[in-house]
Length: 270
Image 1 (cartoon, rainbow, N blue to C red):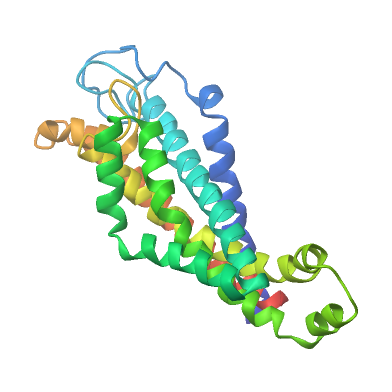
Image 2 (cartoon, helix red, strand yellow; image 1 turned 90 degrees about the vertical axis):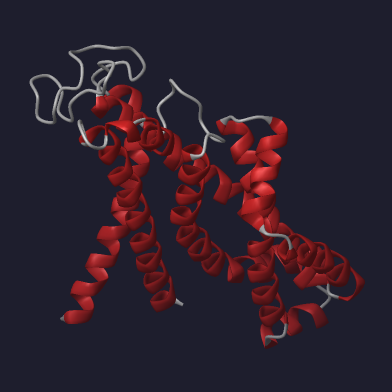
């Protein structure tokens, strides 16, 4: 009974992950106002008429800005994780499947990236290219893929030593077919779980870079930038910087809890 309830709770968390993605995609439809234009009185408190979360110091609707901020943060994190998974997963899969000098060359390159402080490298890239959300995504993606390369390579090496893969190799199955048909399906679950657990970390890094002025630029809505840009109101209209900060916290918790739930579900299935 307890295991059944726990499994339903895990599926609920995975469903919440899908719900947040849906909200991010539909933010332009769900937002009641333009997130950039002043639409109400200045600094209205939460639960004000026509403004559920209130307005900021120049009259912009906070609910609309939070929805668009969730859209920017969540979809950006998904993009970084997807690019990292595709690039790192491909490198790890090829290295683990072919071994030999291919493995050595690809993993030495991966180790070179892993030896560098990822956050500092991302900051340096964004500083060189100029502050913007796109440049931030490029900088983070460049330093994020090596982690997936290591994970997928380890899984691939373990799978390559299993009897059914050895039997397929002895039966004359070509390397590409062996990789696609016998190795790739085995590494997908662990790679997907690792990626899901990373969404929260990417959201925090994106918010941190925007907080220091290297991410999305005003007046566009972004949770980290909105928190930093309204810190001067913390002693007065404190809800203005706190609400986007709480949104970052909520997104990170949802991503981490959903990742743990997905790990348990896929682990139980395997």
